[in-house]
Image: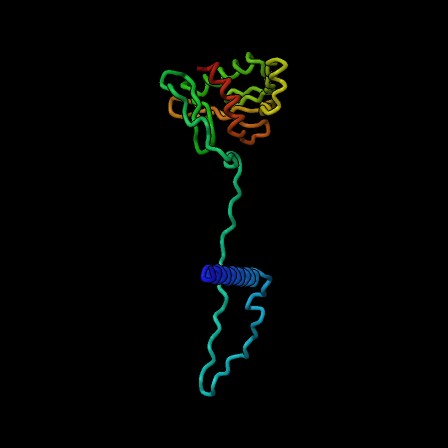
Length: 217
């Protein structure tokens, strides 16, 4: 009985010593971590400036290099269709070999290619503008027709569709525009400009020239 009591006592002492050791090591690690992540000042704040280098007599002083000036020519700001964040959607039209008019893309933007002479395209465009609900403002034999386009209001899809507030509002492309014709071999390119002569963005060009394409194709 006495031996068993001594063994239990020794075991308790060993366990207590182990617990104290673990607690001491844990506190040490915590305090060390606090010192590492505390608001310690950077080492360079305690640095001091050294005196200038003393050159012995008879030796040349080191030459200080002049600063290097890096120049860059002024960049040209993007303009027109270059401001479009997405690539054009009308690089070409499928089945263009079987149609008389199709959308295409060039460095100057989207345009409508018509398989006809400029003189004929000018007459046909005038007819399309006057008979598609657009208001003709000025005609020209070269095909530079100036007109006003009013986009029709979309048909109502019902009460519940109108309640779908998460839908994007349709873009209104109404405005005053001009056509510009350019010969391309035996064909004619039709570009779209604003009434002021500035190029129209890609989306607006697709919308209005798409109407001409349906009538001329």
